[in-house]
Length: 167
Image (cartoon, rainbow, N blue to C red; front, top):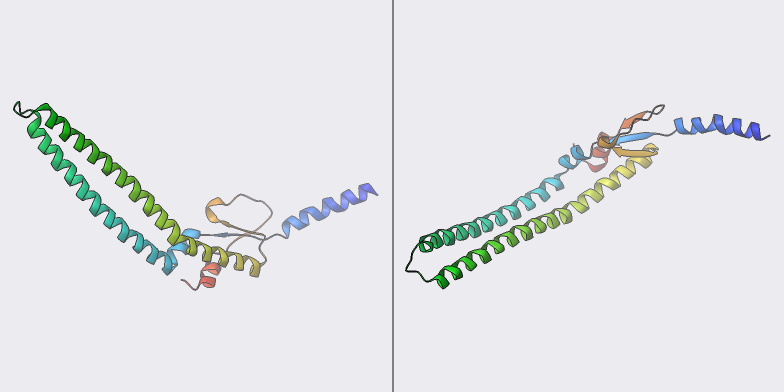
């Protein structure tokens, strides 16, 4: 009896594996085709340009102060306390420039995540719907395709694009 059960399981297990459907999807191609992605990217680019402009102003101010400092550094008539105060001002300004760069980078990353989250959610919902409609066991990004013998892997990128209404 146990031998028959093992034999039945040995025969049925491979059949159930072969009955599974696997799909792959090109997430980058779909994201680039979605108009929301272009709009989000434009918003991020505009914010980035504003940060770049402000960063350049800070850099220019730092360079100006450093050039002024160099003119008084070798002047024997300028008191040492003034030289030290100017050097501290330059160091403080340089620290401010670095802080601004870090804050701007973090803010742009946060904006990117906030703008892309609903787009990614919409994409995941479309992939899930295609998977359910097509009876797929798994739909994976095509970058992470694993070799799986005995099963056909179907590219569902166009199906997901159709579900989203993009070309």
